[in-house]
Length: 139
Image (cartoon, rainbow, N blue to C red; front, side, top):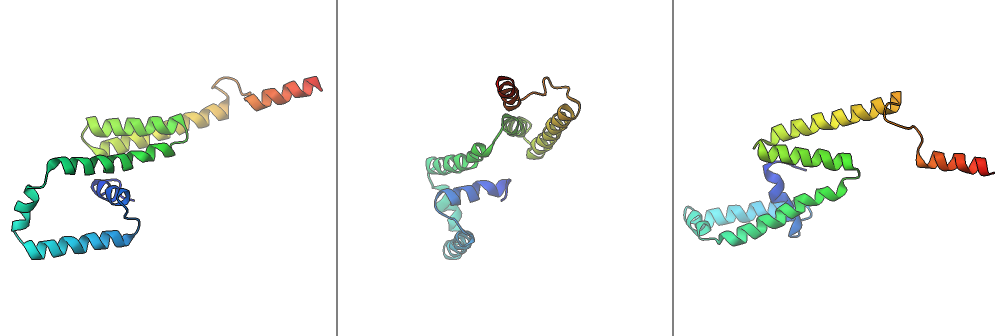
């Protein structure tokens, strides 16, 4: 799935019913027919297209792309996604946001491995292990 400039268009197509590769083919054919029929005047015609309608289409495409957030299973994944998005938006570079997201993800995974391996991150007892110990003491 593209995650760059074409992602908004594909998300919009998906949102409005395009579920297969055929939707992209039909869109391409429609654009070719319009270009052949209208020629240079197509630019003037599209210039008269209401900006508000384009804004609504963009809004729905953005909502569809934002739905990826519901697939985040942990707070760490959500944090990485938010930092990546924030750096991409403020630094005006998707590549910079991607790089920062990868580095942050690797640092969090490294921290997780070190904590498990050396026991530096607090108690090693989980809730279930404490319940098992209490049950064995009672029995």
